[in-house]
Length: 189
Image (tube, rainbow, N blue to C red):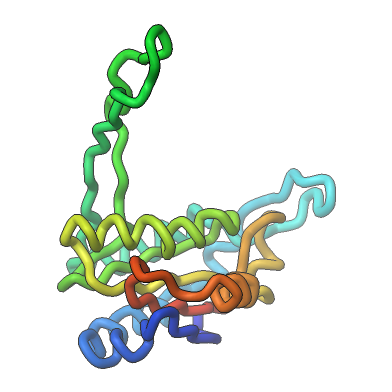
């Protein structure tokens, strides 16, 4: 696979290059080691493309997980203890969140990495919520989000979001005072 695009959200590129140049090299090396053709195994059951062989997000994620693990990146997990005091009267539920957690895909030296081959909402959640949460919890100070470019996403199930769409939305949204620096990497097969 290759890095086909870079987008600097809240000075993400500058921050990653300045503080984590060695880890950026490691991330890009991992991307180039993945043989996307080996992950083109999912037979579509969708009405718009029945029987077509597509790239499998599960296989792609497994390939990333294996290579990041070899380089000793961790995957911190935080238990969620959901509050119940905001309910009124009989609506108060039993304690929630048994087994609930939030997890970063990969973290090393305060640099967080998320790999996303899912729906658009997950990309936005990763950059605008999850990375902020893990920053506030002290796990990361900067992030990298790895997403497919449109050309690659077109060979996955319908609804997979892509780099170009994500960049457009982040540009129109702008940066908030709680956003951390994030480098968005658009990848292709």
